[in-house]
Length: 605
Image (cartoon, rainbow, N blue to C red; front, side, top):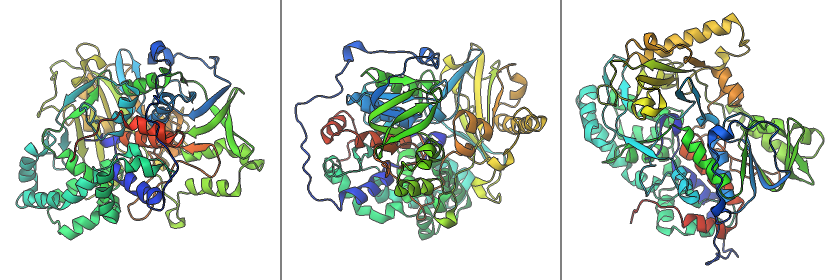
C-alpha cells in the first residue's frame, strides 16, 4: 500500500507506462554494457557521518559550502533528498542547498515546548513490509538507511449526516460500512467494481518506477522486468483514461459508493473521479482493500524520513546545508554550470544542477541568464510552458492551498491508544452536494493525533494535534494581506475556529484542552513563505486525458527538474519516484542496474 492523503496521490503504473511508451518502444538496441563486478555505494562506509537533524538545523549561513561538486540539488524536499541520496550512493559528489532552517520541504517537522509538529503527510504505508512497491521504501533499501516503523490499521470518517465510523482498512470491515451507510445494493455494486478493476489493478502494480530513466538505457533497466513490462503495456491507454469512464461503464448508482469513490479520488490525486486516472484508482483499490493491509508511521515523526535521507546523502560523502538560499542558477557555455547563493557565494557544478523548487521559483532563478541571452529560445519557451496555468491555453492550473492548525492538548481522560471509537486519524466531510463537490473550499478536513500512535511526540499526559483542509483553500481569500494586520489575524481566528470544529467531532472539548503557546495556524501565505510554494499551491491540477506532467530533463544542458511539478506528481511515493528518476538520468546504466539489485519488490509470479 502506498502513502495516501497528503502523503500520496499517485500510482506507479501511470509513470511507468508513459515513460515506457515514450522512451522504450521507439528505441532499438543500445551499446550499454552492465558491469558484473564493479561495486557502487562503498565510498566512506567506514566513516559514516550521522549528524542529527538538530545539529543539521543549527547550521548557520557562514558554514563552509564547497566551491565545486558534481551535482548541486536546490531544495531538500523529499524528491531533492531522494535524488541526492541515490547520487551520493553512486559516488557522485553531491550538495543539497536548502533555503529554510529545516530539511524536508512540505514534509518537514519542528518542535515547540516539547511537542513534535509535522507540516504535511498524514498517512503512510508500504514501509513496514520488506518487499514493497513504494519507491521511497526502495530508496531506503538502496541507501541502507530508514526510520523505524510503527503499524496500525484504522482510519476514521465523519459523514455529513454526523454519523462516523473508523473501520479497519482492508476488506474485512468495509462490507459492514457499505451495508450500514450505503444501504441496499452498495456491497454488490462495490464488489462488481472491484472485479472490473482487477486486470487494471494487476497492471498498475506490475512494474516498478525505480527502473525508469529518460534515455536509451531504459531498454535495459525496464527490460530487466519483461513480464511486468508486458502486463503494464498490455493495458495501454486504459490505465491513463479517467476513472469516470469505468464508473459510467459500470452504471454506478449507489450514492454512498459514488461519493466514497469521489472522496478517495480527491484524496489521492486532488481531483474527483472524472479527472483521476484509472491507474491511480486501480492501484489504490487493490492496495487499500487487500487482506492484512496496515498503515505505517515513522517512530519519532515524519522528520525521521528526511533525517534518514540526509544520512544517506552524508554517509557516502555528500553534504546537506540549510540556511543556504539559492539566488541564481549560473549558465555558462550553454549549460547549467552552478548556483549563486543570496550571500554571494558560488558553487560550481561539474555535471548538473537539479532544481527541487517549483517551476515558478526555478524560472526566477534563471531570470539573469535569460535576460542576458544565455538561455536558448527553446529553453525560455519550455519554462514559460511550465509556468502557464491557463488550461484554455494549454497550461496546467494549480491546486488550491491549505489552512492548518497545530496544537498540543491536555490528554486527561482521553484514550492512550487508537481504536474504532477513537481513531488516530479521521476525515470530516461537510457536504457531498457542495457546489464544487469534494473540491469545495473547507468541505473536507483531515485530522491527525499522531501521539496516539507514537507517545514520544508529546509530553506525558498530553497529545499533539494537526488538522488541515487538503488543498481546498483558495489563495485569493488571503492574497495581498499584511501578515501583521488585524484583518489577517481575524481571518486566522476564523480558520482556527473552523478547524477546531472538525477536531471536536472526536474530541468535543479539544479547544479547551489546548496548551498555551502551542496553537499555531498555517495559511496559504504560510505555505508560500516557509515552503517556497508559489501562491501556496499544493501542486499541479492534472486532469486525466487533458494534461500530462513534464519529465525531468530540460532543453538547458545540465539542468534537471525534480519534485511534484514533474512526473509522476504529488505525494510521498511520487516525489521519491521523481527524485529517483532524476538520479537515474545522471548515473550510468551499470550503476542504475546495481541500485535495482538492492530493492526488494513483491513477488507477483
